[in-house]
Length: 126
Image (tube, rainbow, N blue to C red):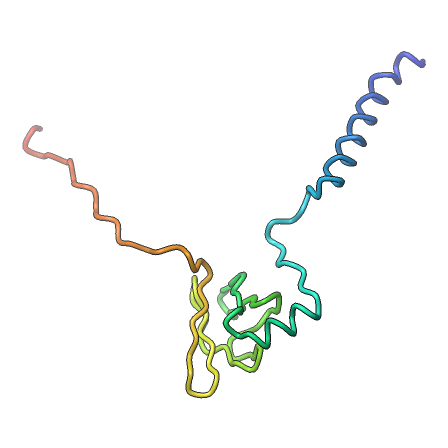
């Protein structure tokens, strides 16, 4: 009977070691989770509005939400003294008084039009 348990025990031990190594290296982190912001960092972020960061956008049939600096804000909601006036697929517009600020989901990515591929359906050769 001891011989039967050797295989499963070895596999279990290897799995436990792998989990411990991944945890020690800081692995197994959810890549979609917004970063954890301490209260000190949140205060600094609100003091320096230029540091506002758009982290995620959710658009469904009935609602629009944005995650800005770890805070989920609906369309018309407020964040750091600004009102969310528009939520699009890749950007959010905030209004502070008369000033409108645009936060981009991918600020370092430039979009460019891609030329259409030529149509190679030559009907004369048929």
